[in-house]
Length: 126
Image 1 (cartoon, rainbow, N blue to C red):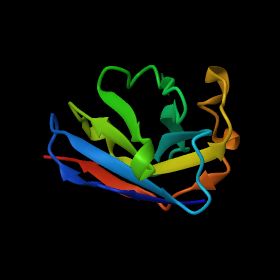
Image 2 (cartoon, helix red, strand yellow):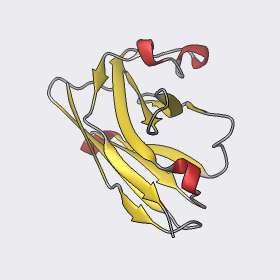
Image 3 (tube, rainbow, N blue to C red):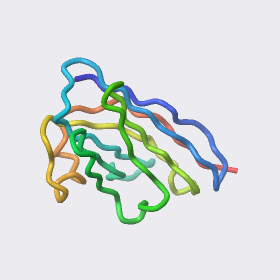
């Protein structure tokens, strides 16, 4: 499975962006996929995740309410709608996937995912 993240860019504080992640290769409806981010000098952290079958979601507590994860099974695409962006949201955003349905408690773990995209830069600055 190959993942391609896109949609990053420069946005002013309070603005919005929608990231996309395209999956290609041997995809399946029984995947769990997620978004992680890594700011300069910091560890990669969980943002949100979604099961491709059923649509169950999980969010980082601090981001819930501003970020929304969604998917389009027919297009093999996953999205991250980011609203009310803050400078501290500046990071490289990565999409990730794993075959199978992760239980909610494991969705936030980096090691739960086998496939990673290359990342897309999001910069929030005035």
